[in-house]
Length: 68
Image 1 (cartoon, helix red, strand yellow):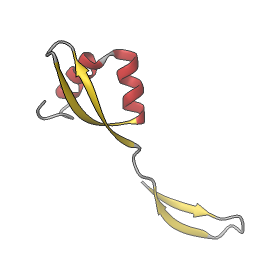
Image 2: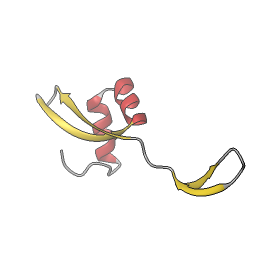
Image 3: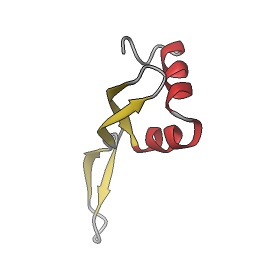
Image 4: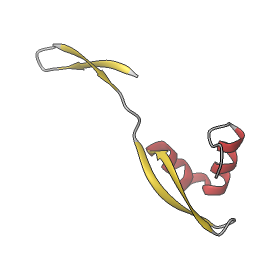
């Protein structure tokens, strides 16, 4: 996403809004192994709320993850 950085004097300079991504290692109990995922901050909250296995199933169904 692109927007403007606005200073105190109201000067506008183009800037980019980057995604807040993290590289995290999760333990997948159904497969009894560790997996490495690059997830956003919202994705981390979603994994905490729903659980890792349900989030992985939804991500595979939506085409977000190709192979695990």
